Length: 487
Image (cartoon, rainbow, N blue to C red; front, side, top):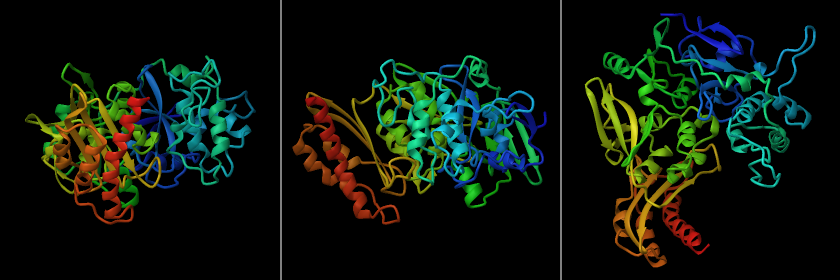
């Protein structure tokens, strides 16, 4: 087994003697790359963001920004990253490096202020700077609004970065001022080459080990031998456990680069989404072809989190407030569970059995999520939270309705945050089906939706508020659909 190594700013560095649970953030800072900062240690502030070379959607390689505070450095064995220090280009002997265009705009437009969050902003901004399909509009006003610049910059790329000096306006100005990468830009040219291939990893220190097998079959055999192993993909959940709760595992098994878990297949009767594809990859590959997921993705945490988080991980944790389960329940999705003996398909409506519990057996992995076709034409995802982005749901409601000749032929409604598990609103679905899609029907059925689940009082919302939001969500859906028809 080749010694575990990572390429940082063009130079190879051994992982040893870092412990298997050591984060990329701590690894970099111990090497003197202190531009990468720790602000929250749970993926909410973006002060730690770095660029990782990943398989691209429109080019062989995409530069993807991730939270270095969450990812174990062992997960990047054989991979290639760039920090804020690595963005600048070397100058002539005896002269300082030349600032990267993103760094230059942040400096001249006053976007740095105290400077603590600046390196993280710069890395997230650089990922959007190098997005292959970003292009300037010929008309400066076309496609430009408060969140999208005339240069094609999507400000949502920075939704996971916080500035404690409230310097958002000059940061936005810097983002909207950057041009296209120059032809000689080394990081732009790097996109035309394939990213580093995944490598099998066995990295052990003291009494813990980080493992990545080359194939799904090898991984499933390993999980049979080590039922105690913690399985990780993007580590957006496990990284918080390590940092905030000081959890450690004797064995961590990575599945994020397994080819069998990274397929997206569209057939005549279904769409199969690999469990280890990141939400960003799914969003860009589907490109709006599943409208309900297209509504979900912008509301799921932040771009930094979506660059690492997976559907398999979100379902695997079994959280009742995960954002994807309500949408997938409304889509009538099923999960494909694989172990060393074979594979089985379980409707997602039957998957959850209790608080953070499911039918998934020891040694089983979620290989993929299957969404049946055709899709319902009337869909919506309503997330009620204290913040617009990068927040946990108080209530999440997903709708998928077939309305034909003014009659609701089929209704699927997924709910999150109102029970010990994500649930279907079965009583409401039954009450809607066969009835006209009218204001009278909605007014009559909304009280049923208010009574679905067993909401509780906690610091995010009261049970009464959660119930009220359920009822209002159906009215909101009806209002939106009738406005779309009248317009």
